[in-house]
Structure formats: C-alpha cells, structure tokens
Image 1 (spheres, rainbow over the protein chains, first blue to last red):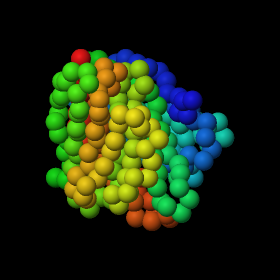
Image 2 (image 1 turned 120 degrees about the horizontal axis):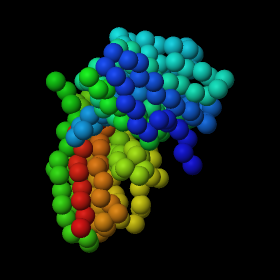
Image 3 (image 1 turned 180 degrees about the vertical axis):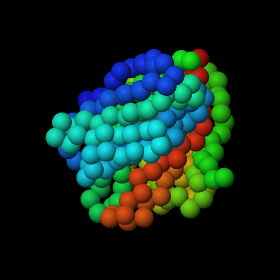
Image 4 (image 1 turned 120 degrees about the vertical axis):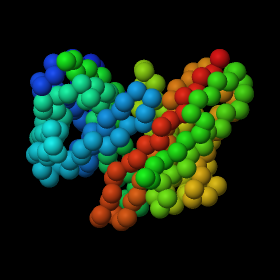
Length: 117
Length: 118
C-alpha cells in the first residue's frame, strides 16, 4: 500500500517557469512533510519541510503548499533554473512508537525535473 | 563539514556472496536509517536505530539481511547470501531526535552504495 502518491513522474519546464509537483497522502497521523532533492549519484538532501499547522511555507524560490482537508501538498519552484534539474521526493512522517520520539519517513516515488534553457 | 559517509561506493558481487555495507553517521546524531532505492520501488526504509538500538527492521528480508550498530560511529548492513534482486542503491541516513515534543525530523543522507549482484 503506497501511503504517499506523487505526480507527475517526470516534468520538463522552461527556464524561468514554475515547476509544480504534487503529493497526496492517506494516513492522517502524518505530521511532517518534507521535500528532498536528489542529484544523480548523490543521496537525497532535505530541501524544505512543512508541518500541518500551516498552509504554506516559502524558502527562496521554493514553496510548499499544504491542504490538510484534501490531504495534499505540493512543491512549487519559482523561476526554475537548469541547476534545479534533479529528482524530487515528497515524504511524510508519523511517530510510530508512542513516547519514544521515533519517526520514519515514507517517500513518494519521485519526480524527475528537467529545466531546459 | 559534517556528513554521512558510506563505504564502499560501488560493489559488484556474484549471487550467493556476502555483502557488507558500512555507514558512519554524523557525529552526535542518535538515529540511523538504512534505505534501499530502486527504479521500481523508489526509496524503501529497511531499518532504523536510535541510540544504537534497533527500533524497526520490518522493511528488511529477515532471512538474508541484517543491520547492526557496533558503536555510535559505525552502522553496518549485511546481505548473506546476496541475490540479483538485491541490486539497488543503499543509503544510510542519520538524524538527531531530541525529545518527543521537540523532534528534529531532518535526516541527512550519505552518498549511497551502488550494489550489483550478478
């Protein structure tokens, strides 16, 4: 059972355009929603994250929009640049062990973004 | 520049051989995760440790995979015997969990070990 569904699988955007990647989750116990960026041959790196008590978070050209009632969240990359070409993963986390402070991330399948000049 | 290190970066082995992957988490981090990445399945959590104790290894095939943390600076993932379907990139990540109410959820990933089993 895939708990986090990500779309699209791949995305081609013109330089300067807006890249939008969407994710939907099923488990209402999720309480942390990060986005990771992965370049070829590298490990994923945290890009930006949001908690469900806010509807939007912006860091530079990257914005997360969060819709708790729809159980959806999305990543917007403004003024997309060729250097943004990478695979982007959304993820969700929930505490599994009550009182233990433990957590694990469930990842979407990823979106390969290509920004063309 | 603190970072997670993994060795080896690449491993090619024959089916049936034992494979050991190593990870050095960021100094001071108390949580270590092992993930497997494939084109078909994406990123899958295999196991994770907190304060060197295994908390969850339900993602691992128990008959052939094992994960340990001999000390705070070393985590290992072992496959014995290896099979072609184990071919994937294996990532280690570490993080710091402070308390139930002040969780730092961020995970820092290593560069991965690309395993090919022929």
